[in-house]
Structures are given as structure tokens and as C-alpha cells.
Length: 359
Image (cartoon, rainbow, N blue to C red; front, side, top):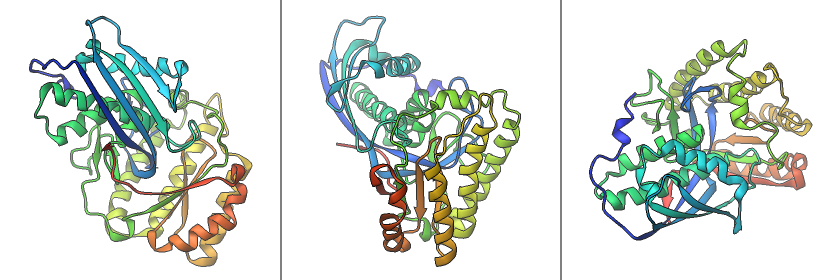
């Protein structure tokens, strides 16, 4: 794996001050990655829809200082200083230091805000760390000049991955693959790549409504969850299954077989939760209302010959996926029935988006 391509080779310019703002999205995995080795290398390839409305906006002010051995930064989240978030970001800067040596020469003030509840089962680390990575790449582009947008996106995904694996899939969109896979040209364990094939029109502008069943802190951190796969009795079979699923999903996305999409995506969601239930220690991440929603979705699909389906991250919230052609009917179903199972009847309408954008 060639990581030297991400180490700046030429002498960098000197800039006293710079400020950059990026909006980067969360994403929802269709084929899940669960289990990794160091440094943030996935045990299987994954693919996700980049979201549009669920995003993080991050501004970083860089101010030149005397170079030191420590990275100097302050962190504000939604207007408040958040020292409890600093250890994770400090660890991220430590991991990217070889690839971004200029961070030792600047004092950074990071201001970040989400368009969705933090730690609510929407991948806030994915959008948050990809936003920081994009700001770092904006600075690097100013310092070295002439970097291609392709390289900037690739390195940003590479850097983001070192903070949060799924963040590698939040730089581009609407479909991103992370992890080396024989059927996805250019795929890599080091960074995410845009799905390289032409997607059938039915999967364009795909809808994702996020039902907020439980907005509390996650029961199990992603890091702990991934570590549970290390000695898991079913882990090796799971990694094989996930890679097989990605190969199948690649064909489905191209040929427009929505019924097969529904079956595969729901199977992936339930398999992720099955792995957590059969780990040691074991966890049940779904809530009673998660199961109520799943059963309601199954009934609606059967009664209406619908292509609605669900997926889950490692938590209780439900992502309801459906084609744009069903938007009106499904949104009404969510509003009238499914919202009753959400905390304070809260849900977010979203759709597949196109990745990071500079503001």
C-alpha cells in the first residue's frame, strides 16, 4: 500500500493566516464495514450513499506560529468550547502528522456544527472528520499550489479515514466504495472512491428518511464495536459475505433490480446487528420501536407493492430507503405512521448527495 504519495514532496510556501470552511455530509452504508486492523484498514470493502441534508459545517482558522512538537488547536462545537472532543481530534492530528507536517506550524481554531443531533446514530464522526480533512487540504493546496482536485479528494479521504473509517466515504458521492474489492476499479483500503459504473436511473436521487428512535449517546462506540470482531466466532465468514454482497450490489445498482436491492440492504443491516448480539461482550442496539418500525415497513411494502426498505447503523435509529418515484407516498406513511415510533416524533428527510463542498 503506497502511502508515500500523500507526503508533501516540495518545499511549502509560507502563509501567515488562512481560513477555510467546508460542508461535508454524513453517509449511510449499504454494505457495512465492521471490523478493522491498524491503521484503520477495513476487514471488508463497503459502499454507502452520501447524504445531502445531514452534514457538518467546519471552519478552521490557521494562524502561523513558531513550529513545535505539539499540535495547537482549540475546538468549538455549535458555539461552545468542547474540550471533551479534543482527545479524538488530537489523536487524529497525531495520525496524519507525517502527511500534513505543516500542522505543527499553525495554531488552529476549529468551529464545527451539525445539521443533525450529535451521537444520534447518524455518522457525525464521518462528516466531522472529513470536514477537517478538507480544510487541511485547502491549506495544503495554498501552501503548495497546483494540486489537482482529484488528488485533493483522494488525500482528504485518506486523511479522514485515519480519524474515522466511514469518514473516507464522506468526501465524494452519491455512491462511494471504501476497501479493496476485485470488482471495483481503483478501490483501495486507504481511501474511498466513487462507484465507477453507470448507475440505473431508479437509484438516482434515492431517498433516505432517518427516523430518530433514540437521540441519546450511542450505547457502544464504533471503536469498541469494531474491536469486538477481533475474536468473533463468525467474523471471517462475515468478511467474505460482505465482499460477496458488494459484488452483487454493484450489479444491482447497474441493472436496476430494486427487489434484490431491498433484500440485500436489509440483510446487511440485520447481519451487522447479529454480529453485535453474538459478540462477547454482547449488545442489543435496537430498541422496541426499532422493531415496530421494521415490521411496519414490511407490512407497507407487501400491501402497496412498494420498494421501501430499511437499513441501520450501529444504533437504534432507522434509515428508510426508497426510490424518488415513491417519495410522496412514503413521506406520507412516515408522517402519519412511522413518526409515532420516533423520539418526540422526530425524523429527517434526506437523499443521496454529491459530497463535500467549500463554502
